[in-house]
Length: 367
Image 1 (tube, rainbow, N blue to C red):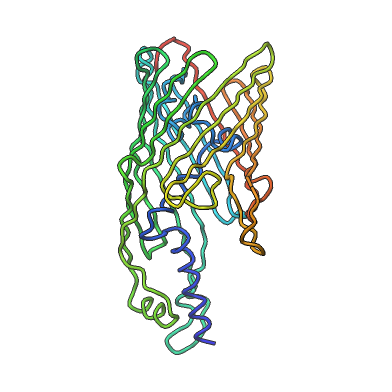
Image 2: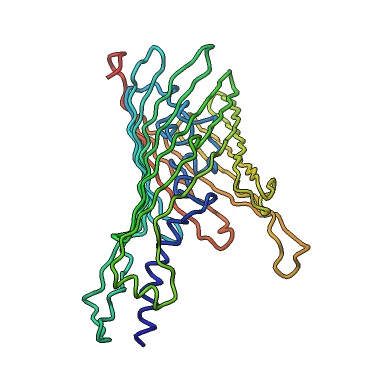
């Protein structure tokens, strides 16, 4: 019985370690930063690199910050992932720096965490007694802080932006990591067409982990056949996102069609356009606007060739659909998205809500 309790205890902690650290893996590092922010973007499956014009551009493409007219803007989002196991929260503050050249700065904070994880490592005392008062809880949390800047370029219609990001990841008192990286974005707009390019982690973002386990906790890990976590460095390889957007505006209706190609080096054979070394992940988004007040959105991504487990020579094409709604209430925008509508791969759908508040420039000058 004692061995069973100790094994269960260590498994709870190791679950958090394995799910949120991915130590020494260059392919699945800082995955919480690949989820994305803003329900509008989620409704179109993140296909907004060429079509982002609010403060969420600090995440998707900082070049888009230059298109914001308001002197100050705030955006916030909350989502629950994996059947409400993980909470994802985001807030961003943007301010116009120079209206003449269209320069804009923003500070954004992202937090994804699994909270209230039971720590039962000390449930069993040295004498074999069970004491539930020794059960505590901890959080496995990831933080991303973005400092972003965007401005217009010449010729007219071009803009450039970048973000410096600081990453903090922690697993209760057991361990933590610090990471640093940078993104650069470019955007070009002409009439109905816009093109965007986003280079993520151009500096090869890294996380440096350190762990602080007591000698008793190390013994429990060894007794249950688990490896003791050691200090390590994770590497996040660069990614390139290329997108295009085409808009048609009529008297009461507007149509936006977005397409995007996400290029990374974490190749997987499942990807519809992937190899063992390169992953080409296409996504598509569509938005219909009614009198600039109500918006309906849809998006498709995660397109994969899935091998039939009963016949390895057969495969089927699967994809993940998202949908969304938006309301423009003047200075406030309310957006909602339902992610993974079809519950692909057994992953439950996620509800995403975001708000955006715009402060108008009544004096025709920056605040």
